[in-house]
Image (cartoon, rainbow, N blue to C red; front, side):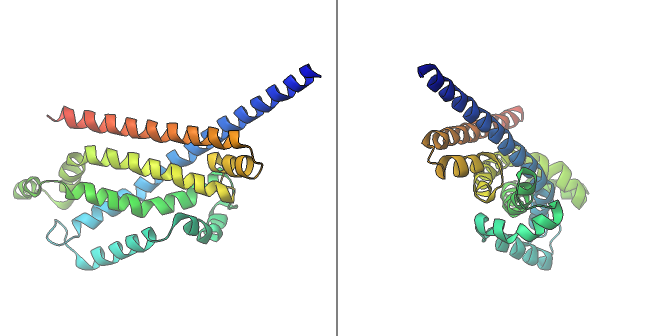
Length: 230
């Protein structure tokens, strides 16, 4: 009797561990892919917001106003609402609105405007004297962007990547409530709905470790880039 009970407990622990490892991998996969895609679209958008601003290298008030309006509108919608609104589009694009792969769509779209503002903030920190020096040497818009704006703001951009990734970890947990996979799904369906407090706490601990790891990695890389320039 005791041996049977011990075997059941061991099986349950192994089952929970397997679920936890799978959910962790799904969360990492979602977050990494969504971060890469969000910077693929958000980085150019952020550069354009800066370059088209008043008095900058490619001043264009109309582009700046409308692009800024779109970014602000997208950022004003809470992610959980954004997630629900994008279900038809996600289903159209991926063939389904649930699962790890499908969750990447709303995660990416929600992160793009955030990335654009992060990039804009990083680029605005650059000393205007460096840009003026490049202009005086005859550098064009593209050359200034690739040789001055992006390289000079690299430490800040790396920190922005870390912040974006951490935000996406939180977003991915919210996506789990509607079957998005990952740690959010594990915590909600197996921890909350089945009253398995141990699963809930293990999920929280893994999320904390992920966030701390990303922040430390981002800080270290950013600091190394900064130190190499001194």
